[in-house]
Length: 121
Image: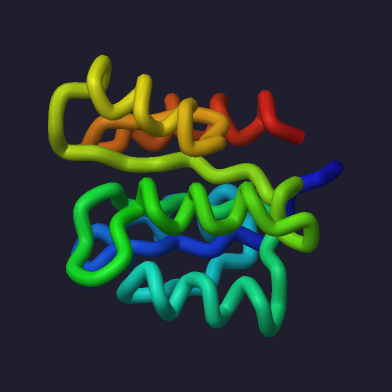
């Protein structure tokens, strides 16, 4: 499946802006959400090809969002990449357990993220 539309979920406007700019300059169409709840609402209304989601957010965490999406047949095939500012080893194990395809550490390295996205297409 070709990835064209990406939903960036992060409670930090700065991080959303950085990721959106980087992904749009690589040719992707990007939409944003400020919370896990907003993410689930947007996915229900217009499912993206990929979700890039922060782990630590108020309300639903990235882990909870990922678990919710991967348990629902309608959204189970949407790949999720989680972003964390903490120890990647611990968060990676949880991310994979919840159904994420990968977990990247903040600050996100643009070239590495784009390479990772290409492997999911």
